[in-house]
Length: 313
Image (cartoon, rainbow, N blue to C red; front, side, top):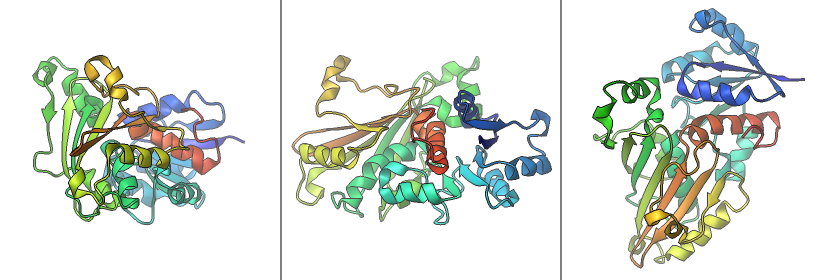
């Protein structure tokens, strides 16, 4: 028996990547809607209710509409939009965070895929908060770099057009300190207050680094770089896709530069712990189209259907 998979919103960046990955597999059947009818609500409803798993790669409003169209009690939905990420009735699709997260994904019919920036942020902050290393009321700051593919088809078109030279330098945005990933970054990490989040889009296609600086003196017991590294290494010690890199490894890279494209075309996420006697810097590096979206979506599908977690990844 092959499970039936339907991607609602298959023309978007995430939808295209999910289809690309799924087409290489022979253990599932991809349901393909007539391109001319992909926005026909009745046709979409038919495909949604005929599928075992539906990926929603849609704007928030359309994702909510798709959920409302679901009448088949056996249909499971994996939503890549922001619509359901802090909804307690949905599993948050980041299995590495805890056994409870993985179990909830496995048993759920509704799973929300984390945002790309949020994935890097939460991979660092959630363990530290849950381990009582980072106080819930700590004034967290986050700086992050991303390739322009994270902005979707419209931004990709701008960067790759004849006017793309206007974006040759990194572009700061969300300067009003409001970003669609902040709610999940706050809630899933267990923080009491929203972090100051400063995202930057750059003139390369994909790849992301998310940086969290910390003052040791503001942390309980003033933990050293080594202690933080040991804790987070143990936390993810048995995970396939999250790798905590050895202390000082960044010094082995040219000029000690840590690039944002190191794990492109994988579902991996690397965490680096650096710093000095007074300050600590933690950095997560991931592919914003891999572990940051389509890879995470398929990882969740594998868990929900009982496949090995890394199948097709």
